[in-house]
Image (cartoon, rainbow, N blue to C red; front, side):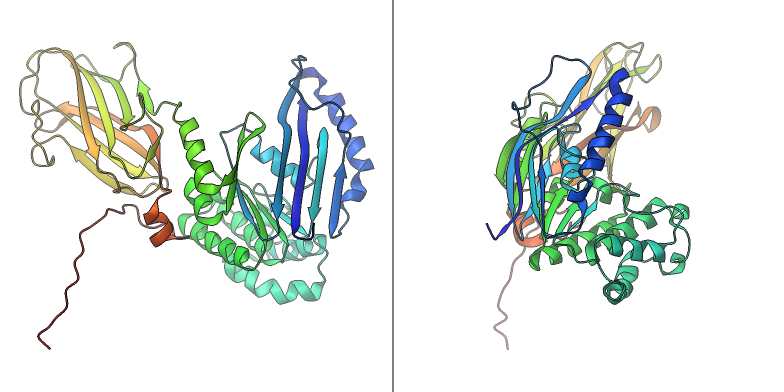
Length: 441
């Protein structure tokens, strides 16, 4: 079909573990050399491997199946996101599509020139300068020096590495490295762009610039495959998403529907830190921490992934070990970039409600202090929780940083209608607005 960019049929990939690894690598090396012709430049690339019996988990403990019987198609100009837990097979799939490694079973068809950015360092020669690596990567993609020169200034300006162009890339910081690698991948005119989680290395401003570049590429009809743990990025950029679980495709369709299914599966992972015994818990002979939990209506137990539209509860549980102490609890949030988002406490001067135990003598026992964050207050993204428990008035006894983390996910109308490809601010509350007509003029 003329509009087909990628077809994958019955794709499976196994790895040998343990003492069998060395001989397997040698065998794989011989196979890869024999198939090297498939990597020559061309508009249509076929990777045909014996299909045999559909891959199943081997009883051999030295065999690990990273992918099992994966099939899907991608049309030209589609932007497809791959989501799933760590170890689900996402990165292995992209390496197979990039012809870095080859399937154990199955078939891959790719129409068009592919450019991949799978990890920091892929495609760069450490001893060459930034300038030399730009020309090297263009040549590998089959571009002439004239074509590369026409793109050169755009690549350098986007990457913001002008001062270091003639420095070997082995001396670059990870941020400089990934900026140049992404800029090269995005500007050398591939028909198909494959991006793994590597963009997490860049800072927030550069990530936003990359989002804009990928959005522009998709509008120009480029085919883009993205693996990311940022569900906000996936929903902003992608037309469709594919969910991988245990090396198999378990969902393939509308990006919002697939992301919601993934979020539901992730909710089995507890967003909590618990100390079952006082002896192991942070604190001293006066107070001991028992647990910090993230809670949300509609989710049984604690939650590592929460819905942006609903209230989020941060619950701090502690043991009071001395009678008649007056205790307080406080918590603070930072976002994934380390930005200090907020701090709150059950102290009367801070809390918007009257906490019945603040300022009162507490009997010995277990207490749960809960702070409620309104729905549609935090923007999408990951947040880390730090907590303090102490004696009134303000004497800290327990202070624990980054106790638990949680992800806020947004697939609703505010994200679609207002923010679009822009990630937005740290907070994004719904605020009252009113417009009137001035009839005095």
